[in-house]
Length: 318
Image (tube, rainbow, N blue to C red):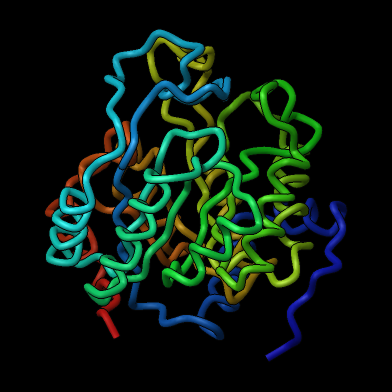
């Protein structure tokens, strides 16, 4: 296998992204088969453990306190509620359980201790544990690592150039700093972005560049399709062509061969054929369960039927 690269240029990324689609998918599939089992995907489940009233103004997010949406705020769940959901996730075929809290920064004190207890409990169930809690201090990252956290999700969302059009309450550097703290603590990084925010292709190249020059590459790269939610500034955003999502996934697979590329939000609006093309392009993980934090997602039963048609199985717990 050729050595992984961390010196990709935006120009090189653009050339890959713009290849004729059959050639792009062929190259992505060739890379995929060198590093991953082509007949297997990882199922993950994402639970909102603290919902709404987030002080950030991310224009896509129904949990922002800046917008009036149908999301009902809810305090941090009890550990037992979280672990019950983790058991259900395991029964449905998930091997990674992700916990998301609508905080700008992870809090100190009793709430953070509760998250640590939940992480320990999820790991005891034999599942990978992932959290997304906002920004972290060095000490918090270290405590999460000691609790056994597998991965920490902190998405870049979009390119540095377009970022200010989507979020004003946190800087791009804030996000990169959090990723550095996670890595220093020895936790693997889950980091990706969203397409369909109104960004240009150049912004997509730039986002992929930011991900592909990280060393090591993020272990997990979620690629999300915007879910347009009433009440948010992007509620009336024009839908992005699904072939852009396919190109994004295929290019990510070529740039970051060992990473898990996760087909994430937005699947409910996609046909089975479109989802299958994303899998062919190198996506090897999905989120199961009827909600991704607060937005709708196909049911686990629908996904099982879909992957059965493809002859692809969920990765087993090892």
